[in-house]
Length: 131
Image (cartoon, rainbow, N blue to C red; front, top):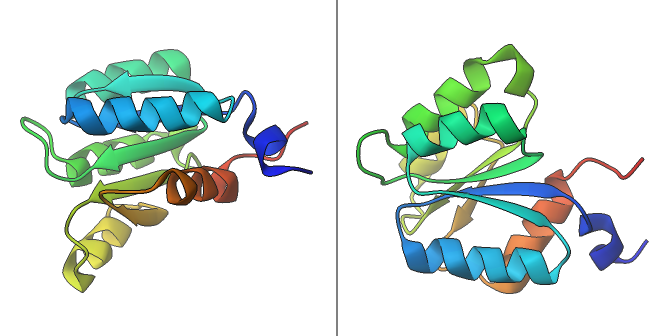
């Protein structure tokens, strides 16, 4: 199955306090046929996760109010979203950051700035198989 078909209709949430990152991710994902939900911080995201039930979540680490580690931990503590893949987004690529992400339940780590290919490959790797 072509990659584009695999991503068509996949509901992806991007949580990032940077408007530039949110918009570029949205453009790449919409071009690939994904449904996109945007949140600018953890609190905004938690309300939207419950309402829209995304299938893949990208979560920035450094955000005001509720950081990405706390946001990921809260999402993963909810029985309904425990199996929803959460991919941490960060400009820091250190071992400590990756390990801390794993400790709060993240499924993967994507370094910013990401490319269109790396973003779409990550979604393809974690998106549920089409019915």
